[in-house]
Image (cartoon, rainbow, N blue to C red; front, side, top):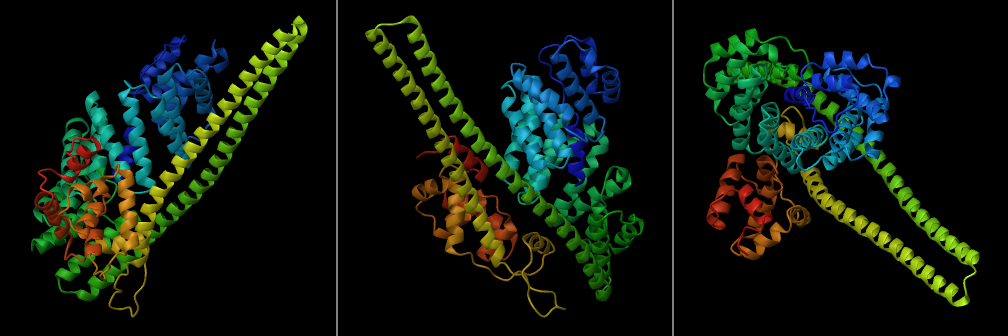
Length: 568
């Protein structure tokens, strides 16, 4: 959450890349101020009367700059009417591609502030399409806006990571250190869930860049890195990073989990006095996440002092707060799903209406063509042969128009079939994960007498707290769905591996699918009954190096396959 807040704060630093210069010099002056002094730019813009501007282009430019300056000055949007002036104008005058891209970006930002993430996503994707190929900044900026929305609504899946990586490389090409820091921090947080070495690399990069250019923002990334080291069992590194935040950067961090990392690391290292000191200076909780960290730390210290009753009580309190957080996030997800379904229905209606309008336009055009031809022939009193010739010509044009209509209908069918195929791939993945979710049961605490099925987010929370999981074996249907999903997303990679690596067993193929789908080591551990998550990483290396004979990482293998660089 803290890194997300920092990302949103930095996202408002979107630069102004100008297309055509406006006639009014005041607008040009305001545009030059927005990046570094948005308040000053807003003062200039608010002093301009839209009615005094000479052209529609200037009025659209004023609407765009005013929306951008307000956003940069952290003034919440209450309506999208102003930015709509810019979007409508530049949509009709699409030759000014840079301003059209910028208008679509800020339309998305306004929709995000108004609580419509699905509409925001749609405008960000339109902006990415509108951006010129050499406009690397706006292309990369759209990608991180889309990736940030994916993070809020879904998870750090392969699409989110791919978009963020592409944005990182484009900002790197531009030598834009601000956004290189943002994207590397985002990648570190995403990889922290399943690929720790990559997470460490990107978080170190974010820390290095922030220390050089934005020192106050390094501590959010240091806190994330401390957490990764803590859960990897590297307690000395975790403790040193957390102590650095406590001593130098408390005022820059929004949550207190680094106190937990520091004290819990001291406990693991046998330094209880130091752990108790950290407990004594830990601030009182200000939010639910802080409360959860506070109770977890109390539980760890009580357990270290052999006070198991107090440890259990504090642990139960942390569970209550964690369930509250999970419930709130589940409710937000349900609300987002309902909004998505509503927009999906509306889009289908709009699409059908558009198709009908196209059909009606073609019919009217053909009818007018025939009418014009008939009137012209009657007026000129053409001979019978000439009339017949003109009639045949008109009939040919009519047939061409009808064929054009049929071709358009065929294209519509092809697009609909493509959408159905994409939906099938998504359905395969959802059905696979749904079966995994429906069949996992968690052992109840010792004070309870019955076992219970929990939500998928609750399962991940309990897995994070290292509760014992009952063995689970996925069905053949699950594996078939997972294989179809991976094959569809990665251009038949599973089929390629089966045909070219005959030495692999069925379990090897299934495990390969889960690695490609970025399934977390904890879940892979459940599906194959491994003793711990580290076994999953060890087996991944053996699968690639010993069984497949590859001297490369899985990511490199997938990249070479997609680029057709592997021997057939």
